[in-house]
Image (cartoon, rainbow, N blue to C red; front, side, top):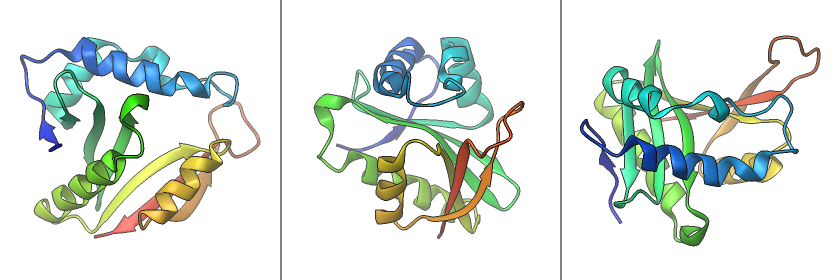
Length: 152
């Protein structure tokens, strides 16, 4: 399956449904709750306008958001449908992000994951990412998020 960049008009609700379904397992595991609760189809459409939204399949079975930041390409909202896990789709999406960073002359792909999601830490490390920092959400005195980077 090949990733493609989603442009308007697109079924942004299908992307949101995928994210909500695949992020649901975080409920009760992460504190504070995921920002996906504030995500709307309109916000995803805006992401596609100001950054990039990539998907696999129609309806989407994998997605990610890419945003250019100073000297880095930020990868957010990576989701793969449960029924499609174990097929290498996350790796395909990551490699697409790396290719986009190269095309944009950016030296790094960066992502964040919650501190509680240790399986994500291991998966990202296996795909060439290294932890480069820890941060806290507003109002928290302990780290809540890990930042990972992969040089391209």
